[in-house]
Length: 414
Image (tube, rainbow, N blue to C red; front, side, top):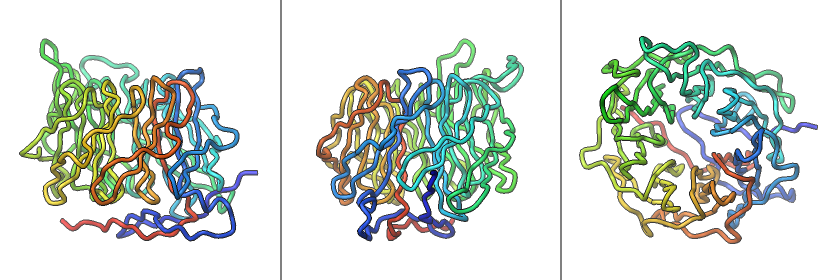
């Protein structure tokens, strides 16, 4: 029987981040969050599901885990029904050019629903808008691409709809529209406020050295349509707006939607931008900032205080404290923390906001670290690393909705 998570996460003038523990006699109250990890060694790929122990952060693989995904799943994103608080997970399958939808049960198990084709081939990343109404999926090859178009990469824009009520509620994706963008999109993020979407792209102009670009869009909150922010221009086979190093690999925005950060895996750098009131980006004057070798993913803790970068070649996590006034990331206590071999993805559970996990590609493991909310330093979680299926590719953490809300990020004013 499919049971759905009935905890409610409200989002109006506050982005809620579950923190309270509120234990009862039911054993699942000791689970503060769930972690999901995709892996690509098998064909089709797999999704590993874990519960997070609230006292230690240790991961316990759920019964019936792993479950099937599509071919080469590479990205995970979640959404929550505003009507019921039920949670759903979207899985981006690169080789199938599909997005799979899954319902999250009260026990954290994932229940497969449907698969949807993207408007182009080989999707790589996804984001959900602030209202949970639209799913944006970045892909790398446009069907019918010609050099005269601003492709070959693009964004598939899916409307998200919820049907049914209570435990029977399901999620579905409507017919997607398409936005052509650039040569090689590698990441996408949607603001929690202000309805802006940013995609990072690796551009290779003819006869020139590779460069990275961030493209900014204003979202129509009713239709999901994306309108380029001022300053977009054609460059090579794609579009250009804000320079982003040489070979960008990932992008993230802080919870207040005031700063955007991009990793550059070739130059081993972290590039920061200020988000202005109209959505345009202004490079941080004291950047870029040094990372470890070959940074490929990054995340920010739910409080917006600390930023963490995973470095593939160094097998480390770099920790930074974020200056609340200007966004400058400075090395936090401990600097870099060693994890297992070749981490490719990173997530922080949003319930307590103190447990961090990396998906380690070469080892087939998940490393767990506890972060200090005072200084951002990392300490290895007991029994870490935790086993996963071969070749992990992405990771996500969602709260267990039974826990009350007491940590919030207030809507900024601009």
